[in-house]
Image (tube, rainbow, N blue to C red; front, side):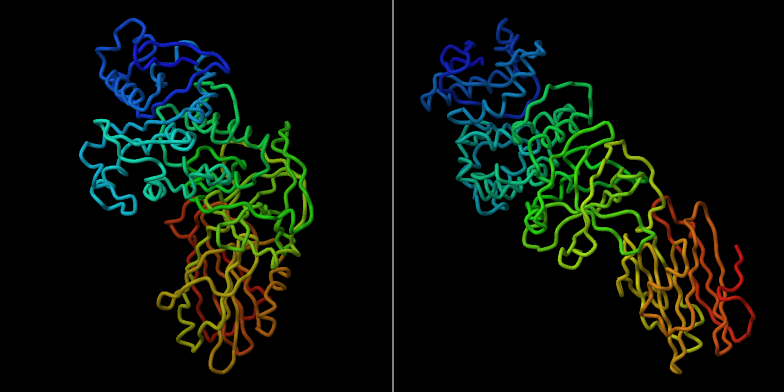
Length: 530
């Protein structure tokens, strides 16, 4: 480890247990930073970044420290071996420092006295929280690792310690307990880094290695794969399943693996905490392992009560603070014991008492493939159901249901706009009734077995007939028109059309229900015009 002699401003090298006490600098890299070679050949003294070095050393001398460490000039970045060692050791170097000086070059001097740690809107606090230092990836570990952290403005005027400013720092960073940050779950720690930036995409992973106490060789040029490697390293020594509790908008790509592509996917995970699933089910899970079939794990799966739905929810051993429901992610079944994650933009919350009868334990193989287009996205089917002239015949909606992602039916869940019911789900159903007690029901959705669909609606067992409009998943634009004659002689017509505003993964169905007095002889399902 190289250190700057704070008096001579010369570099000195130390090994293993012979490293003296030192101060360490945390800063944001700007123009003309003094590199290792610049300091050796004397060019550094004329560079803009030299003032930062002399300021750090002057403060260290004032505090009684003979040595200081500055990342820009104490690492020979021309040596890949040395750079790799430094990246893997940086968290430890900050932790072992006697004090860390945080230099905020974009905070003008004169605001230290007006900085109110309990009020983000005070003049000094406002200047402090807008510093770009809080937006950088590497500065997260520099904030957390050292025992003592002191903040200075651009003229090296002291603004306060981490302990002094803890309330304000929590407001800025989302970190609630600096003294015990290591006890936070993986998802929480990732959330702290989610919106921080690095110059190189690989550094989004490398700057977090110390925070998770893992090591891996840096490979610049690997891009997003660096973050995948980081997660695999975390999994190799931790059973913290909150690492899977991320969300990300995938566009038209509906399938992906269980690992996130960047820390940004954990943006909304600041309140996630570890649960006690193994204790609840009295079963310990075997360790994860990486195989040629993908990541192997044993998970608790929540299967649909509908036997036609082979997809499942994978129960995670984590939940949001203050809630009893556990989090889960949706898994598509690609083949026997081979799964991929779907609906990556959402985490599902499960009541274990309610879902316990549907939970099974299964060995999974999940490939971390690049996000690929998936099957029709039933959850994002939007139904706009117009009651049409049925209202003229005295009919009104009695009950309505929308099916969840696993075909679990729940009453309600939609909303009326005039004479139109709008809702979202894998299927929809509504029953209409008039003043004479005459009823009929409409089912709109997908499935292979219409009898099965009728069994689902035990609530509708006294109703004259069910319309099951779609018997398979749509491929392109289509329309359906189905008829049914009620015992009273009225003929019910249901017309369904795929709206032009639909897009892959987000289909909008326009459904029109109408009645007429004409009696038409037809089969149970009526004629179909496609």
